[in-house]
Image 1 (tube, helix red, strand yellow):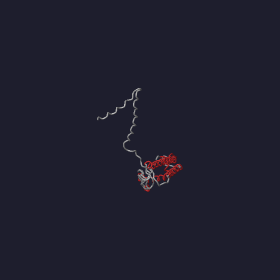
Image 2: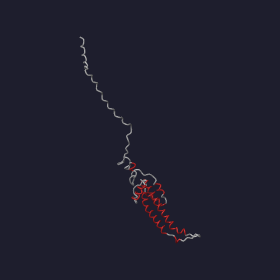
Image 3: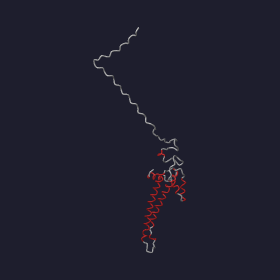
Image 4: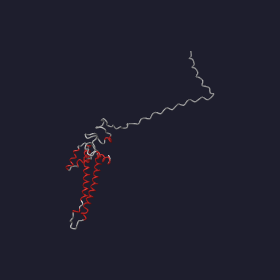
Length: 204
């Protein structure tokens, strides 16, 4: 799954915690979330410097500042926008994270570790590969690539891979016999050969 498909899947399954999500879907969505929050974080920093620009320029020699010069409107707008973006991405991020754990055959309740500063555990677990075949959370998302369509090899709907026949190549068919040439024609005027003489009678 590519970047665009993973982003579309994340928004189309915005609050879907059931099902499975392969590694590429989770990590492409995670990259998208980081890029979005990084962009809004830069916007927030710009609004912060705009708000405090007058304060920095009015600092006296003794270091006293006039806080009444701070323009809180830009930094407030930037902060609100950042918080809204973070909250908007939090739910689909946890949803695709839970589906990623399901894809490995693990429960989504592992995500509760992030509430006690142990979120690195399910984060590392998301690096593991998918569990093959259907599990309790759904079908294998890699089934179309692996040629699997059931819960076990050889089961109903399982695609049996066809391999070419092994062994030697078949012998070529025998060549057709060449037609035999007709006997040469007798020259004109030639006498036909005499019939063979009858056998001699036996002696008395």
